[in-house]
Length: 176
Image 1: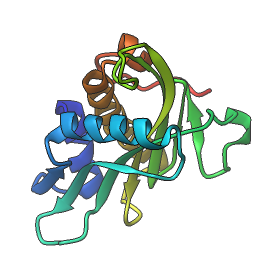
Image 2 (image 1 turned 30 degrees about the vertical axis):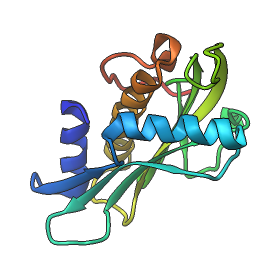
Image 3 (image 1 turned 180 degrees about the horizontal axis):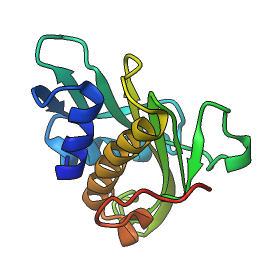
């Protein structure tokens, strides 16, 4: 996680003292698993690849979990559940006080064994186990910040063209 992602995690957890664990091999290992799942099963929704787990120092259950999966399509921002606020980040981002999801169009030669460029939609999600303390707007921003950080790292590891449309640094996006 980049610096802004670490600050957002500390804010969500209410402590500077937290632990993280990542997928085996870090983001590169997670990217290999994403590619392997694509080559084995194609775009299958529901199969999540763990990217990162964030723990308060005294707990064994992760307080924040960051995952990636494939999506058949990007939902319409008008059809998003009322708990989510839609934002213009990647193809679409949805955020609530407990969760943020960003949909990314990733065009990469890594998905096909022959190196031909394939475009697929990735869904990167940050989920809080419990309702964090704070204002709804601040919590949405923190969740989006973490999701951006993880999504950017995954897009870079996968070699997505133009980092799947994510900017190199997080800036709070406008509502969609």
